[in-house]
Image (cartoon, rainbow, N blue to C red; front, side, top):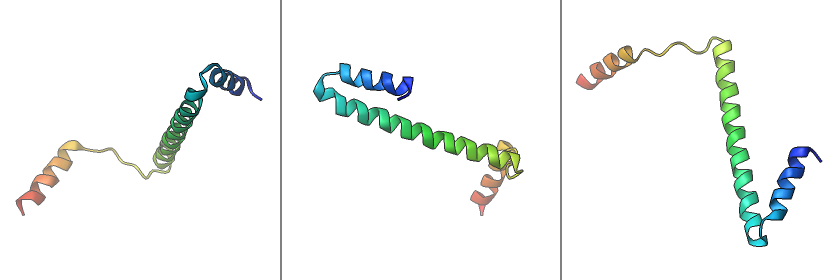
Length: 71
């Protein structure tokens, strides 16, 4: 087992029995959120590198939104 896994296991074992399951669930949920965020960032970087992204102009957006609202 890796050093990080050993540390996580040791930390769980130091907790009272009733806290182990919630702590493991919390750690797992945080890891899943991190993975989802990392995947989204990687996807965004790939979009930039492939030229599928252009700078966002707030003023242009507001002008178009106001024009559509007047219709």
